[in-house]
Image (tube, rainbow, N blue to C red; front, side, top):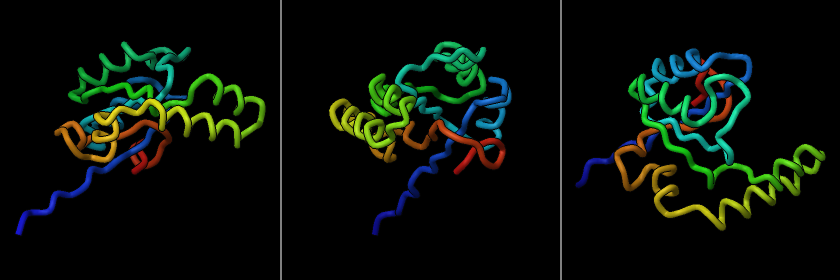
Length: 132
């Protein structure tokens, strides 16, 4: 019989009210190997959280960085959420993901097809600032 491989652990982390250094430290302390940035637009007014700066800091800490635009919410969905229309926002997110998610991204997210699949995700805080 073949040896079973444990599925990857996926964590989420947010960055409201914290510094880039504290986020990267929390990811490193939790043993995160891959930061999967799932923002549609990986931009931020907060210093250190736009794509190039965040990627550089993560990689300096030994954490791989990948941006998955396909998992983010497109402009139409963000606008619907701001208008208070969660049903429309959800519909926009779901339709965008189904239409644009490449097989490679799906393989990485579910933990198959690449050694980088043993990574983690981006979202809201928990233990060490990282939620499992």
